[in-house]
Length: 540
Image (cartoon, rainbow, N blue to C red):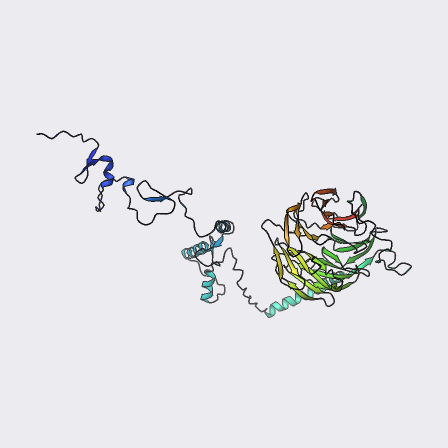
């Protein structure tokens, strides 16, 4: 009997087995080492071995494959955090250096030093350049310089000690030439000019009044007896009363005479300090000339008989207010002081604090002129010093965007106030009750900090509306504590209500920047302002 006919369409013979044409992939001989036909992609796979990856799906060929979580495929999470990775990524793209994750933390990766040095070596070998004739040290030092992983764009590690350069001695001929040049300078009078410039920088003062003493023998510095505080409630001024225009350049700071306020001290960019009569004539009484660069800050003692000044000539001077003489120069060209402050206690008036640009706060004794203490914790220039907590502690602000609290006399910080949202605060003031501290933040706000056992930032209360970014505009309170006053980068003066934090009034006071604003201690409705237009204005 003949075999029945079979439809062979769609069938194939594979290893003596009749299978469907689409199922040939399942019957490939795995022991065969040579394949004579073109296999499809899904047939060329190895059997899956090992544990499955977490969160992975099954691939089309039967193995496990991770799900794509990136544009380029699957990215597996590493042990480094997202913040650290982002920081290193930004550093590598901006500065070209980043930490090596396989090495120590002090080893850096660069994308210019190693490649450029290897290219230079290959180029010099290919061109056959001769070695330079510069003096070489030992071979070990040469290899160390070439393999320095920190070298990038010609810079070395910050902790590497700088090797002193060997100074070559002058020859006899060179010495003769230098001696001839020195004699020629003396003949032309350059040495005489230099001596005249040094003499012009001597401390001196000029009295502009009629006489330094009246008919009764009282000094011009004595406050009038009729000055008394008539009202305890303060009012915001409305009109301009007087204008002082004695300075030729901008005025940086103003201070009323302590207690009476019958005199006003001003420090200017024209290197001069002037004191003005506020009560009677309104004229300039004395000019103090001792700085040969702009004056940065001034501060009265408790009785007003002395005052401190610091300028950009790196001098801190203690002046006699009445005679105009310099009692002592505390720092002669050694440090750039940004702020000076007497200790507020009457029995510690010989102690002076000075915040400088070298990140330190120096404590001077005015009787000896010596530095008795240094407070060194800031990472930037110190901008302000404010005494709190019954003058037992003081708060400093700096360009490092932090506030630090110190016990007076102890060079160890007891409180460190910093936040990523904080900006630098070049001016700080404390309210009359001593419970709160306000800081002039450079993001055009005034921040409030609670003072006491815990120094905390009050995020719910912020004073806004003015524009002080880039300027160290002074802050001040009214004597009763009802109003907060501040200058503005556009020449305005802002008055805020302390309880509601709302703008009570703003006035256009100066054409340039309004740097300072001081409330009169006795006349509760009068305010003095100063600006970079060289004017000092008195408002009532």
